[in-house]
Picture 1 (cartoon, helix red, strand yellow):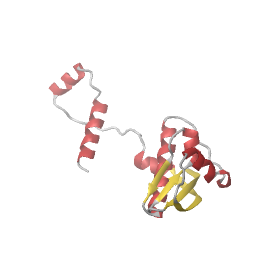
Picture 2: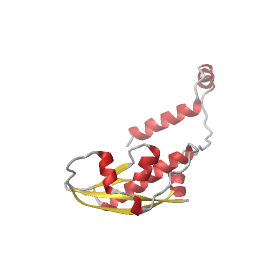
Picture 3: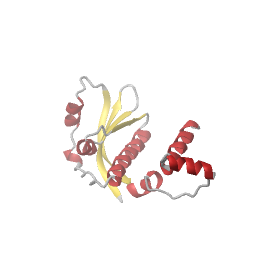
Picture 4: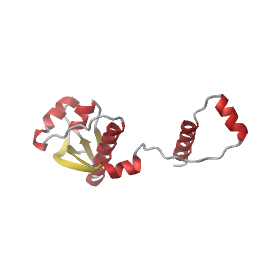
Length: 150
């Protein structure tokens, strides 16, 4: 499944790009913005932003926000909403960004995977008596180990 949203890019005077997805910002009442040091990185970050927000909505059982026509997306409206005076950018442009949500979901989705683990009997008994959620505990321990080693 692909989604396509109009995206606003600002080339910043000090370098890099600021990126905004107004449709997602309005529909989800969130800051749907990102940035990148190069145009390529900014476009990639826009794809990740769109995919992440849309996938979250899908996994929560919510409707996917509707996409506007690019001509209906306004720099002026965004700038007014951001309330930034004297924004010193080099240039700005808008384009569509298409994202394959299916491939993103395969890589980053919250679909649960069943794993079989072996633990000592006494740990199992003690954990059950304390009503410890085994899945949640394993998930937390794995995340801690993953991010500690990066």
